[in-house]
Length: 589
Image (cartoon, rainbow, N blue to C red; front, side, top):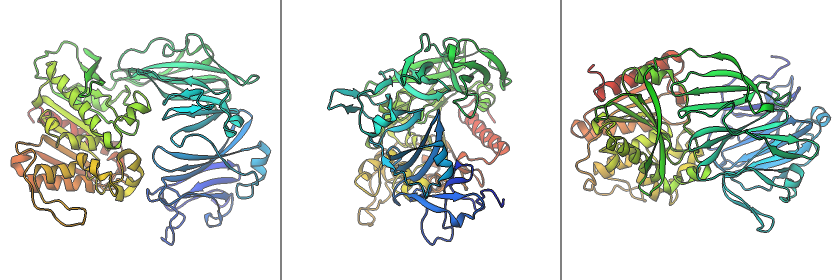
């Protein structure tokens, strides 16, 4: 549009309004390849000030980061009478530098970013911390322990620390307090803001509670509200979840909240509530219809003991009166990476495609995720990646030992980072003997080259850099290398690029579980080459004797989700559940 903002070529883009007539934009400014405005990870490296009614070519650079960084971002917003402007340099997936300046409502509308004379100053917080605001209060979320005030005060990793923004900028933590501090069983999942409240979503052994904190503008202080941690109108049953969000895009308008409830067997329900009574009284608005028959089904939570003694929680969706004789078809799902928590949620696909057919679904909250905060994630980071594999093996063994299932009736499933997990499960000596089938979706599998493909460079903070000494531990959980070189004994390149001699198999009795691989030609995050080369090795090098059932489906559309629309998504999941039903003997054909 002549008086609007338009970016015709598709590219990874970040854009936000700074004022009515100015946008801050990061995109691929040089589509002709003349220079790089994207980082090695493929995200915007440069942010520009773009004025209404002008072509993008006239936008002025206001911030840029290094080529090896993950991304650059710059953003401004009004917050309860204050105006904040930040520049964010994302160095790795978990480390950043924040730069800050305080502006006025009049100033941000009258002076563009490229002409603003108020300087940015670096925010003195740890690089692995995250920063937000509420009015003139800084909200600092920690991923590692932080000691301040000359060693007098220490905040634990996983804490949410609040203090006045001007004091933070001066490095003064005297008035800093922990709004949330983790325990071995409690972690902070997320937070939501209203006019006068911050609502914390807290996980207690992966069960949700809501905690309400009220802000006093006069004293710039916070008070926890009495009776605010019972989950919003009552305790939350096992296998269910509750979340809140501001009912208005401008969260400082009032204290009204949308309250969402759902669970593994409970369809999404929307209610309206208020933070002023800690969501004790709610008004029903709408609910999804049930998408599958949940009569007779129950959800249980159990804990398995991993190899090092760590308790690993997992949820089981099953028929209430089934026989514990090892004959039940069980699908075990996990992720274990990037501090992502697998929380209860309603899935029509799981219900109609698996539970209604008599299958059992298990969700394992293994290390590498965020269910117990950053320490739970860091416990399986880089060289410690094997911990999440040991965790899933422990859950699988617990399922078998309980009589719920058996090796022939147990399958594992995972996508993306979860695909890396599944790739290891079908190649590790213990895990490959625990599963009768596997589904490996949009997976990472070649950990030697993952950082050279698409967005792979951005994940080196999670996995490590294979071009350094990190390859010594990455090699131990690179499924492609475990298969070709350890199991099949194929020659491997040495550090000088020369082929070594073939070796003896480290697991001559290995047999691949029945496996379905799915990916997408148009995946812009995990390259489909990972799945393609793994399947080629299984079919052509392992052969039918070692890998009797290996199936492959590649959609030509769909990105990282593997499907471009609901019809394709339904087709993909129908393939998946039909494969599993046949592989585990739930259905004969």
